[in-house]
Length: 168
Image 1 (cartoon, one colour):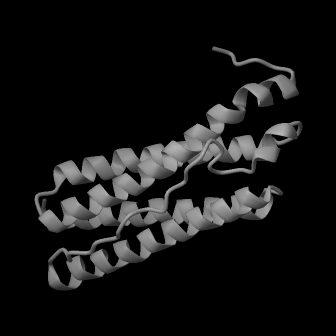
Image 2 (cartoon, one colour; image 1 turned 120 degrees about the vertical axis):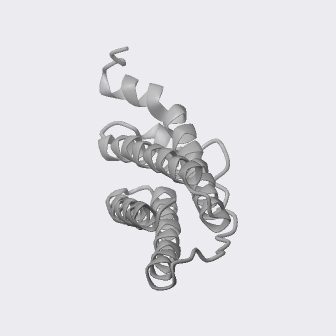
């Protein structure tokens, strides 16, 4: 991949991570669910780490015209039936519009990130770039799985509490 295209890709990746940082920080501040607050803070921290790694890659590519071999490790597992919010949230869903919106927007952000990192991985020929984008894709996929699991756990009850059914 030519240098200018690689740099543009890193700029987009940096903006993507900044969007995630700000969104998850806002979600942590706004939710009143203690577990949700903690998990959203953790997701913001993950995105901060990704941002810092991408900054290092960007600087290396601009200054040295080379990709660094950076291993970002494994993502923390978000496991269990209710990986984002406490089980008690399901019992008090009436009026929890923000939490459902946060999950929906989080799922879109993560899905877009996965698609972008997949594309960047496929378009690059440098092994360090391929590794980095592959790891970022894997981390974001873990985030998306947890968010989707949480959405699936509470959406039917949420819809019932709000007095509406899905339009599809």
